[in-house]
Amino acid sequence: MKFNCIALVCALLLASSSMFAAEHVRGQLKAGAAKVDVTPSPDQLRPNSYGILDHTHVRAIVFTNGTTIAGLANVDGNTNQRVIDAVNERLEKEFKIPAGNIIYSSTHCHSTGTVPQDELIERTYQAVKQAYENMVPAKVGVGNGVCYLNVKRDLFDPERGTWWEGPDYDGKSDKTVGVIYFESMDGKPIATYYNYAMHAVITGQLDMITVDFPGKSEEYIESAYKDDFVAIFASGAAGDQNPLYFQQTFDLRDIRIADYAKRGEDISNKMPPGGTGLDRNDPETARLMGEQKRMAESYGQLLGEEVRYVIMMMRRFESDVTLEASRSHITVPGRRQTNGGGRAGYAGEYVDADPITLELGLVMLDNIPICAVAGEVYNQIAVDLKNKSPYKFTMMTTITDGHNQGRGGYIPDDESYGAEVFEVLSSGYKQGYAQSGIVNGLLDMIHAATH
Figure 1 (tube, helix red, strand yellow):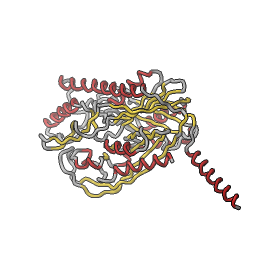
Figure 2 (cartoon, one colour):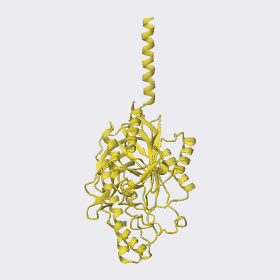
Figure 3 (cartoon, one colour):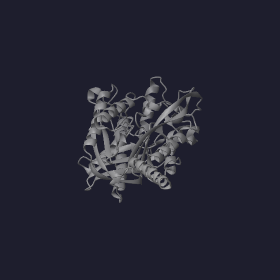
Figure 4 (tube, one colour):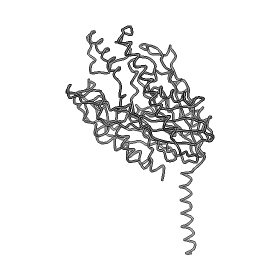
């Protein structure tokens, strides 16, 4: 009987070990990538658009270890939950890719248009489908770089005596460029997925279809590797991060504000509407718009150079990997502002509102946690996650999976709630809950995926 009990215990331990192994199987990595044009046709442009400057794309990387399949996809511009749900439904039906195993994000460029929703669904599906069909045995590398292009944009100006949107040179700002790189077993480049925290607002005053610095960086990297290489920009926690050199936008905004003032409308403390108020025949306006176009190119090249450098310096690659993907939700107490009307420089007043549900996602590619938050997250929330993560290369991708589903707007870190700026004033998240909820929620997901 004693022998039988010992045998039973051993059998149970072996079964438990086998169950754990089944959940964390190592297998040969396969990866594929693709991109599909999603540029609106001229007849699909908004009435106040001045045309198409750049072509926009949806890009996708799909990978598997033979047991689990997951992916990363991104669109130049913005997407919505209905598009993602429709694409996921088709992928699950036709390729057995579980809904939630692909992290969808957007560059959040403020100057892209969009094709009709049915077309966007089809083209997004085609990008993921082609990436799936392009999968080949592969290996993956990861690394961190630095890029000094972003700056905290919440600034208290002592001369003006008020808050406004400007470069806070002493503000907290994570300069990290996180880079994941895939290549075939014989060394052929497949794709890269890189993460940086900066708003795509350089060309926002052109009133044209543009891809801003994210798209320019994607194009710059892809041109270096040629063939069918795909580069995906993933927006980091950029809720309070602007480009460091950004003066053209402020100057053009001032011109637009002055034009509205001549017509008796004060928009000085509001977001200027697009499409009106800028005379393109005016030499100064034309000069500033020309500078904006060149600035987007310059930013894209500089960020692209850092991504290429990080790839060049990678020395360790993994081809036999574990792969896990999961989704979760957190609920955050809400608030509603009762004294709106301005962009910055006044104290907000609030009442309690319904709780807000926020979706979190994770793709755990071997020892690389790629975390997703469906909202516009302040920079220090991602820094908090990185500092607490047990893994050196931890990414937080934001603006994911139809990011407006949370209905809470910007997500400030706890320390930033005193700033009288539009992101904080308009936030529907009550102070003291979102940061810990996001960070602890993602850490729990990482732990569950690796234990």
